[in-house]
Amino acid sequence: MKPRITALAATCLLVIMAPIAAETKGSYFAVIVSDIRTSAEWYKSTFGLASGAPLSEPGRFTIVNLQKQGIFVELLEIEAAGERPETRVHGPFKVGVLVSNLSEFVAQLPDAIPEPKVILDTRNSLRLIQLHDPDGNTIQIMEILDSSTE
Image 1 (cartoon, rainbow, N blue to C red):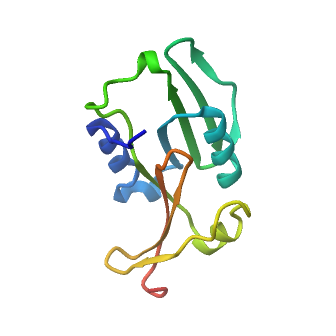
Image 2 (cartoon, rainbow, N blue to C red):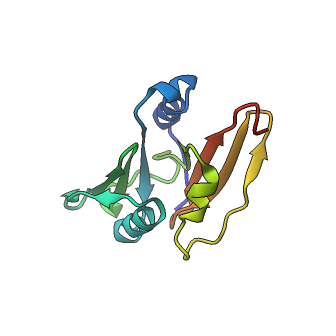
């Protein structure tokens, strides 16, 4: 499945990552996946998320919501009968989550996740890593640097 992004999803991500993010209580994102069980396990083990009961409409979709304090992730598996044609977009390919300490986050990653390369983005005062879920979606974990850590 080729990752794609809709204008609505892009707008939602911009709102989540806007400068007011420090005033919010956390992050939310939804990702379209091809295998909901595999993806749910990956997100649970990688981010320490707990899952609620799945919601499904047979022949159309299955949704699993995962959460912990500060983050809520919605996984959506669209069954073949409900998928849009390949020429239409239907989901984000890259989402981001802000953390207060990137080094601590990396240290807590499960052994199954290869140690990611830490990227220093001095133009935007960020340290970040990029993880890839089973469908190839990019999950970018970012720490905002203050002037004393650059």
